[in-house]
Length: 307
Image (tube, one colour):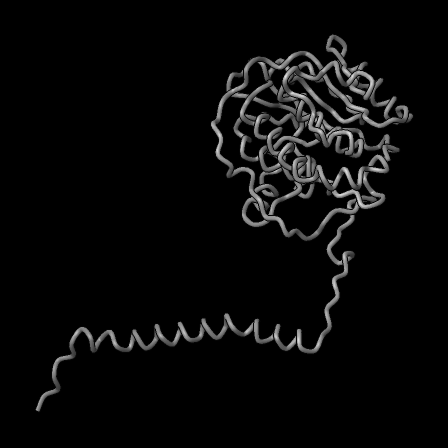
C-alpha cells in the first residue's frame, strides 16, 4: 500500500516546529540578562555615586549619563529662509565682570587686524543693550548664567536677530570677509565658516543621530565660529530650543546661580554643553545642505592661556 501524498500542511509542520524553537530560544536569550541582573542585585549593594556619571573635558566636568531624552529636531516647524543678507560685522563676547585677559586681548587685536573693513563688535555687559531687539528681550535666566553660557546664548540671539559672523575670543588668522561675501552671493546658503574640529566635539546625541553627527562632522558648522544670515528657520529653532531649556533651568538657576566663569563651583545646574553643543550641533547636521564649510579657517591653539 503506497504512502499518502503529503499535504501542504504536512510540509509546513517541520518549518513551524523550527520557527517555534527559534522563538523559544530568542525568548530565553532575552530573559537571560535579567536573570544575571537579579543575581547581581541580590549579592551586590548599590549606592548612587555621582562621580560614576561624569566625564572630564579638560578641567570641565560634564554629565556622562542622562535621564532626559529629547530630540528637538522632531519638534514641528515650518522651514523658511533668512530675511536678509549677513551684515559685514564680526561679533565676539566677553560677558564676565572682569577685564579681558591678556590672551583674549591678543585674540581681539588679531581679529581686528585680519578683518580690516569689517565692523568688529565686542559685546560686554556694558554695551549689551545696544544689540537687544525691541520685543525680544533676553531670557530672564540670563543674569544667573555663567559668562560662558551667557556667550552661548548671546551668539544664538545675535545670529537670529542680526546675522553676521561670530567667533570666540581665540586667535584666528583667516579673514571673515570672503566668507560673508560667499554667503551673501549664494541664495541656497544660510551659514558658512569653519567646520567642526573633531567628531567628539560635536557633542553627539544618543543613537543613530549621534553616529551621524560623528560621521559627518566635517560637513557641520563649528560651535565656536560661524557666519549666518539672520532670521532663517535654522536660527529660529536654535534660539527657541535654547530658551526652552532656559525655561527649565530658570528656577534652579535662581537658587544656584553661577559663582565662577565656567560654572564649576557650587551647585550650578547647567551642564557644559546644554545650551550650545547639544542644541546647535544636531541642527547643524540637519541643515548641513544650507552650510558651506571653510576648512582653511581655524583657531590657533598654540597661543593658549584661554582658561
